[in-house]
Length: 95
Image 1: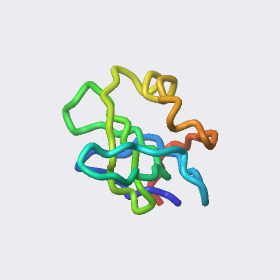
Image 2 (image 1 turned 90 degrees about the vertical axis):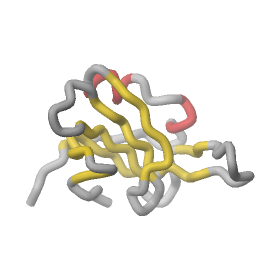
Image 3 (image 1 turned 135 degrees about the vertical axis):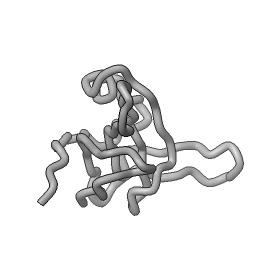
């Protein structure tokens, strides 16, 4: 499932979708229930030199994010908690 062009105001550069099973889970501090992560998106805010990797639920709503110096770092440093399904990364293309 392709993400929207922007997530949390940042332009999507690359993305991955897990399919019917989540990549993994995020433990929430204020909730006894974990958030399932189905979408991963590497994004960049306008006029920024850093990249954000957003971990998203099944509606591409952000449940966790991280900041990286490069796109390659954002992909390479994927936490073990998101490795239940192999991430196949795609360049975001508008059509």
